[in-house]
Image (cartoon, rainbow, N blue to C red; front, side):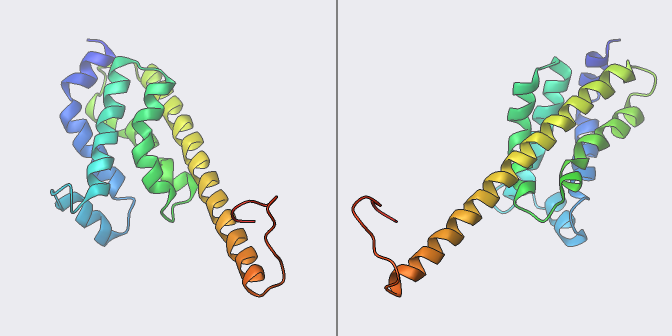
Length: 168
């Protein structure tokens, strides 16, 4: 049996285990809520996380390229980027898949190939996380700058000219 076939055969159990492991990276009360709240409107983080993990497993089964991995990672990484996770804590859920696969697919697969694919997934997750964090810091800097110059303008210390256009 190939790695893809073995993974596809046990996808449901692997996905459930991976989701539980991923939400366990949150504080206890949050993790409990994410696991138990089934309503996607009341629990959009849980729903997005579950869908991303499922898409990642599908990509792993299909042997998809980096672009597909990035697309699947995007929702869960964006969520984790706006939270107080460090880069390593935000992306650890990808590495946890290695142990989960080893537990569920003992001796049935080429572990080296799967581990290599998971490492590729983790690198993509880290790149995406850093891109999101850079955007957040850029937005914060722009907002601070706008507040600062708005304060100066209100105080009459600077004046807007036509060359500055709207804003500055």
